[in-house]
Image (cartoon, rainbow, N blue to C red; front, side):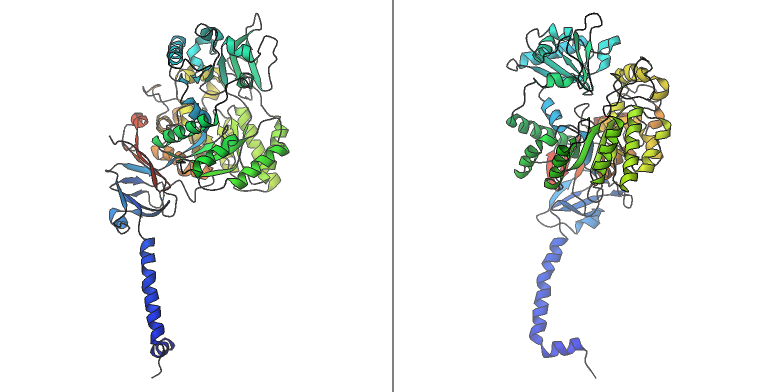
Length: 576
């Protein structure tokens, strides 16, 4: 009987067989190592945001990646003596949340300034300012933000006189919650050289007394730069400290990545320094802010250099932010028809439409992702028109350009998001129906346009992709307030009854998607982030309560008990 080739080889070469056997045995530990975990999160109720496996009980992590997701039994095999076991105690586990629109350094610096959010009116604002000034006597300037238009009654705008009463000789400069109007006292105006003869700057308005022409202290949009030029500049050390505090704050609220929409590109070296020092605990996608009136060669040089230098999971460039209009409260958002409360104005575009369209086409042709701030219906249409033109000119697909904010929109433009593959990057908490929204924002544009306020569900129902964020420091970066508002369209007190434009309410699952896999898709990272799946980055959070089970009006009370970024625990709180 003839023997096989393999048998003959083994008979003639026993030494070779032994060598092969030993080699095979030596390989075994490597295979075992590939099937073990550094960390296991177990005893959990895991909502994976993976449609093929929506729920699980445990997840195994090796290095910075997820290696297994499944039942306790499925993941047990990945356990070894040195594996760190994190007992979730039956609590809800989600993918790390992404904030798709943030101004991170600005928000971080504001953690140390006076906070006017939630003030009840001028008297409350003044009290907060007195307390802050008393605690910070050595600060040359009083800086802060957070006031809203409704705090000033019928005028809906601040006046320098309220600040002059407190600080006749100390400059004060307070930015409104939306960042589009600032409030300066007489000392700050004088230091900036603003008089009744100072002309309005490009894309800005110095609000003036009708009788005298004197500045009232309210500075809209581009006029803020006049005082900005004389503000104290934070030192490098102050910026680094602020960034560390901001990352800690973000991790505490369950954020594992943010998309910067302005103010951070210029500080890329500082972000990189923290990464090199192993102090970075938050991932950053940082856009270049392109100022009008046109795209310049120097802009392209900076954008391309950053895209080349920063292109990993921790810091990445390759995005460009533009702003085509202002905000509705101050009548600077660009509208197709006049404002209802003041028919003499329609707002205006910050860019000449053709120059904006040309810039979009050029940047899109380079494969860059575009973010366009557009709040009024004319602003939104202008952005969609430019994106449609870029697709035709460049023959590009799946570029995923984004429109940021979309506070109101014409009905005919809603399905264009899905048809054009444009991301609707929205901030749920901006729609919070407080007095600013219901008594200033809505009356400014009238019932018809207010009836399409923050129409995220309509956009999604027509095939558009949603991505959610905060616009911090405009509102808190805590996503849980945003999730609650997306679901209820009500205040924390349950007002108005039935919700503000209730047709736009969404499910908890859809809201979570907007902050996770939808956000990853909006940042071109859905293959590596956004859901708890084998092979993806191990960015995971554990919550204090199950937001799918609690009353929707209590979602904002959610606390994060553990935040894991890249397999490393970066925040550990206390479970309820």
